[in-house]
Image (tube, rainbow, N blue to C red):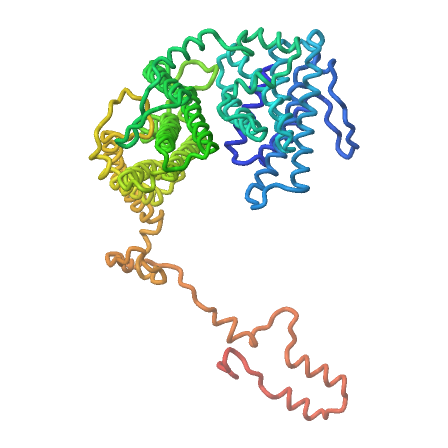
Length: 618
């Protein structure tokens, strides 16, 4: 049934559309179409009756499973859209808004639990153990989201722990990135925050918290261990790896030419794990099968977790000294503060490195996407990617560049960084480097939408940023290319981007020049009109064409003339229905009957005007 894949693909589409409200509207359309397909849609002007899905329905068609999932997802999308609307409020989400969000999440969890109950009858529905586990994890994640909004931290941690253990076990069996995405975004951060609210130590790892709060039902435990026997206990290999890491743990740490001793064993062990994860990351990135940017980004998960553990261990040691009353001037406290800045800098650097490999080759400067062919089609020439998909890819890159720029800015807030002017200049140069890449990506989006002038302006801006960054980064020492990408930017990388932007700037200038020339070409038929017929038009280029003033030799053409006949001779032409002056006079005579006959004869003897303007009188 692939419940998790069905849900994750729908939510990924919602990210492309930009908000949860549009995702909710699409879910409503899909629900209506699916109900029509199943023959259970409400007829026009008919009263809606809630018809619950039964085991027999699922046995008849698995489309009923997707119907329940769509209804549950619509309620979840409604809650998320309300959270997005109120996210900008200074007071947060309070009162009726929070109650409404909780009610939508409760509805979503109710439909998910109903689906779990139906699939539990495996013999009737034909569901497998994997389907039941996926439905259980989905319901637990929604319940955890509801408890999170209720601020019931204990229930929240228990629900999310159940979802985490199940998703981890399923990922070991399937080796899919879908479960890793679910763990990294909603599940793990919620467990960490809930544990923090419950007062659990931050040094306690998330897997340990999840195992502690996992339900102890024998049926569920056996079902999970069927997919991963070490889901609820430590693997033997991990113990050996940790022992080797502790043996190779460093004794000192260096930050900006200052070396301090590592007196805390937990910090030294965590840094040893970071070193081992770095070596493993180098092997994964250098392997031939890791060409996909998403796979290369997923390879950073282990080193990011190890770096976070090192930061947590350092913070825990500082908190212990603070609770003992040790001041800032103590040597031990000074060493821990330097260690904290160093490990935090490394963690942010690895986070930036993950985003760098995800944007593509050469930090996203080379915008190459292989053409894709249709599935199931015969061998033929691959088709070019549609413009909409290209814009979506560029939009994803912009999100990654924004995350990189925010990470660089967060480094400036670390203790001791503000007083280091040399480091500040280096961070500003790296900020300009990534800002140039962001401007380049924006320029490409304007090129796709046929806005060459905007693309030229953005490319010029990118070249300026790259020039500023290259002037500082070119003097730094080049590092080995075999090390995994992080915050370090080599002079060769800076020089490569600078040269590429220089050529790209010339290309954009040529495109703008071509666009200007093509836009100034007159339309068909305009070039034949002489200047005398275009005196009411101002020449756009400021140049008057004096070679085509008039047509010579002149040709006989129709000239518009005002008709004199209808103006001057109107009263001299008889038309059907019009009466002459004589007829009007006879009517007046008959009506009055008092005029003398002499006057009538005199009027008859008077000659009438003939012809136009009184000419040709008799």
